[in-house]
Image 1 (cartoon, rainbow, N blue to C red):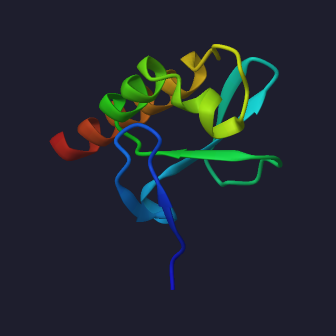
Image 2 (image 1 turned 90 degrees about the vertical axis):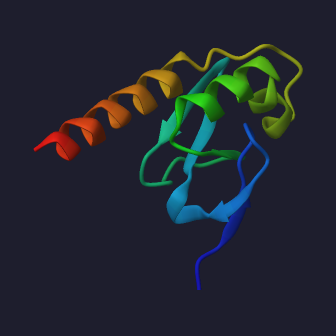
Image 3 (image 1 turned 135 degrees about the horizontal axis):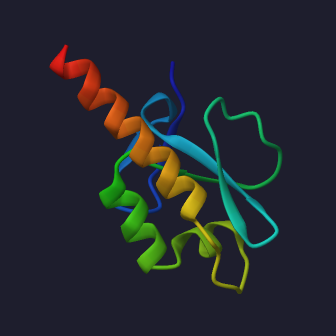
Length: 92
């Protein structure tokens, strides 16, 4: 049975297989594609809409229990690349 987590962007509950786990490294949010990074994690759907909503709400900092604005550009870039690759595969 798959574990269920809540997306910090849209707040919908999904199986972890449908989400990306992110961790904080200093003031940067880093995606962990295989979920292997240690420490407190935040889960987000692999969609730019959810990532941008999480950034706008400062939801990553809330999930990590930090009181600073975090740089989530690495997560945004990771999701953008993933979406582009999926679109490319669909056109083939």
